[in-house]
Image (cartoon, rainbow, N blue to C red; front, top):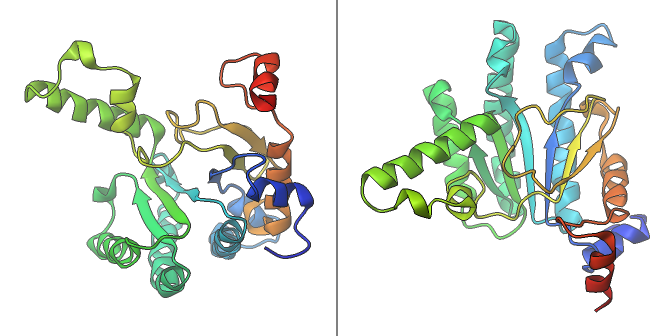
Length: 257
């Protein structure tokens, strides 16, 4: 970690404030381009550079997992040309960054319904996942053609199949059973959620997983988001008291025990 990282970030890395998983909605690419009288697709291309910066920064700051919302299940409603550009950028980014991710021990995983993607893109996703599967560094999750409601419905279908197969009784279905069938069940739930671009919505992202996540919204458009902005979000996180249903007094007693 560089010497100019704020002291509270250094404390966070030493375990004073647990921050294992960051989830980000990367919003504002189109508006960034429009403000520069450029096509929206230029904003998406500029946004790829911010992805690279944030992945590197999270690795340097000791973050265990980073989940990026790249393409929602609702984004198919956008203009066909824009969607096509997004798919092309996704393929190109995977192709360009695969070796760099692997050399930096980043493990890549893509969550979402892949059947809507072309065969070429599906194969590239599978190739990069296989290449990085045994890496022990940052766990990078790309949510593409993903929706939180899709995730919950998928889990429900899997549980229904287990019940039909006689593996599970309906009375045994609880939060733990459902949670085990969700995407990212093997990762800690996000500690910090960041949304760039000024909007203050979750937008069908990780609905199950964000139950106790600290939310942070910034007006900075995604192509402008950099290490400084990430540190500002982390610093805001360190100032919050996470209660998980307890009172503030109970948390303080636990912290001082």
